[in-house]
Image 1: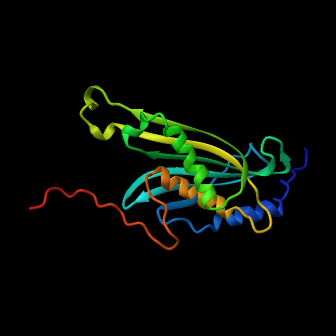
Image 2: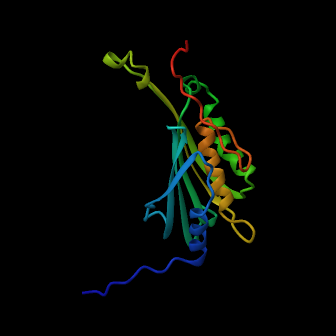
Image 3: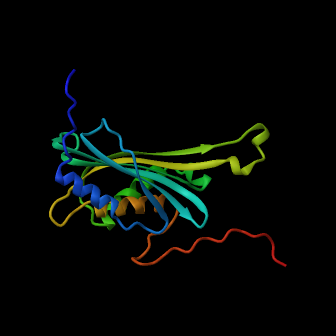
Length: 201
C-alpha cells in the first residue's frame, strides 16, 4: 500500500493573499463570507461569496475566486488570477437596451480604475436575462424578473505596495453598482430605501 503524501504547503505569497482577501473591510451593503473554492482549476485557491442587501431586501449576489499557480500560467500572464460572478436584478426595460452589455462591463473596468487596481488580461461576458410569466402566473407581477449577470476574470498585478485589497474592494463596488447602489465616500453608510406602506390618511 502506497504511503499517503500530504499536499505541499501553500506558498507564502498565496497565504498572504488569502489573509488580505479575508481581512478586507467591505462596504456595509455587503454580507461576505468564505466559501469552498474550486480545487482543480489551479494548485491553490480561495473564495468568498457576497450578498448585496438594502434594508431587509437582497438585491444582488456574487462570488470572488482567487487562483494561484506558483509556476505561472501562460493564459493568465501571471501567477494569480481573480474570477468573479455577479448577478443583480435590474429594471425590465434595461434588458432590452442594446448597450447594457457594454455598460455592465464598464462597471468592472471603472471599479478597478477607481480603486487603483492594476491588472492585465481581462476577459468576461455580460448576460441579461428576462423571465415572463404565462397562464396562471400571468397576473403575478412578482414572478416577472429581469437580471444582469457578469462573469469576468483578470490577472492582478501584485507586488511591493500593490496587494489584492484594491481588487477586492473594486469587486465589492461592482456588485453594488450592478444592484443599483451608488459608490459611497469612505465612512459613509447608505440609507435603505423605504418600502411603500400604503396610502396615508
